[in-house]
Length: 109
Image 1 (cartoon, rainbow, N blue to C red):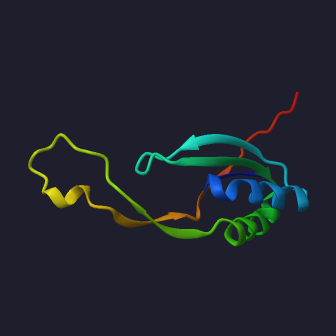
Image 2: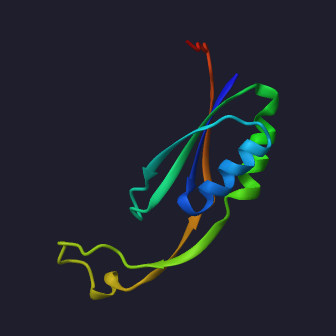
């Protein structure tokens, strides 16, 4: 058994949750936030049999899309930074970050 942790942007979370239900994949979702953009994310925790991991990964890949967005960096107290540091910059957001861990034991009470 594996534990799949998938961190996706909130924009993709509802659709991915529906895809999991459609494919009979049970997942627990928690609200999280990213440190760099301080934007909302959702983390899915999925306990799944080893042979279904490729299916889960494919569903995440098909559903959680990367996109580009402009953001303005947070104001800094560092006076050594140039004035251009507060100009909007294009960053890639979305997609998914996925961790897969072995599950040594599983108990359900």
